[in-house]
Amino acid sequence: MSTDTERLLEENDLRPLWEVEKDFGNQFGGFEADIWKWEDIQASIDAIERDVPIADLPPGFQRRVAVPVNTGYRNAISNTIYVGVQTVSPGETAPAHRHGANALRFTIDGSEDMKTVVAGEEFPMRDNDLITTPQWEWHDHVNDGDETAAWLDVLDLPLVLDSLNARNTFENHELDRQPVTKSQGYWESQYGRARPFEDTKEDGIPGPFEGNCAATPPYRFSWKDTLQTLRQRAENDDPDPHDGYSLSYVNPATGQPPLFPTMSFRAQLLQEETDPHFHNAVDAYFVIEGEGATHVGDDVLEWSERDIFVIPPDEIHHHDPDGEAILLGMTDRPVFEAFNFYAEAEP
Image (cartoon, rainbow, N blue to C red; front, top):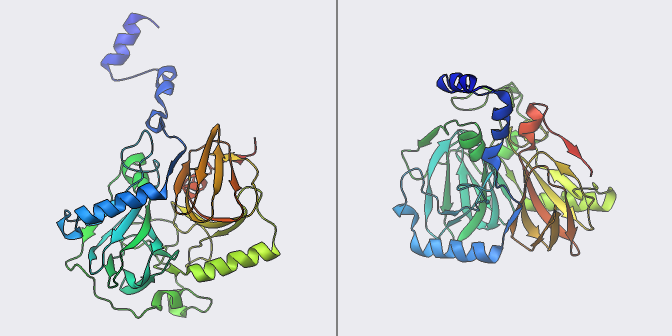
């Protein structure tokens, strides 16, 4: 290409395709398979709890959270999924707010007296319970017990803020604790097998949003029930070659996955080594029980209870549990499926 042509393109902020192509995808450079060991996370969240009362944090960020950050990023485990470990001390409240991002809580250390309040209902946070915080629903976290509570926060913030370069619509509640206007079990009662007829009509996504997906309601998935179903599956069915005995957390409004339009979650019971495969979605994991290793390309991630690890897109991987293990799987696969971009294969 001549010097005159190059100058003409540069003066008009234009570039030829064959040069632009080299820069595609650079924002995802440095994304590596990575693991965060629970002993390190525990030490960190204990130190933060000692040093930082929730009341001292700036409005809108009154959440005491340690955030796993992947190589090449400064704010999250991947470019689409944010995972954090949050604590609330006895007597503390993480004040009420709401936002456009989808979120959930997966309890690590909880009790009947630790509650996340969503859309007017108090949801007890027992160990390994999963509680949804849908778009634009008020939510606060209240510890009326005598032990520090901890849980995973999982949001689609990086997808919204970084990948889509959009804003996370946000609002603080006028009160630290939103009014409790629903009895415990209300939201579950609305989305069981028998449902109120007047509520079966189609509703849009709550808040100042529009979309074509059924809104995710506030909901608590009891670990007791989930584990029972997982055990039944292991006793009666064959395992998936890549995911073992796997259960999807479904959207209670539809009875189908994904749980959110942007993220899908599953409980996986592993009893033997899985077959290798790869796909173009991000997979992140929290180890609920057991220990083992996940092979990702040439890397081996050795994990045990409560560790967090992540598998980048397009990396060949498989799990190798040491005995029996249970994982919480998190993925951005629904984003790819929405555009018919999801791809998966065996090597």
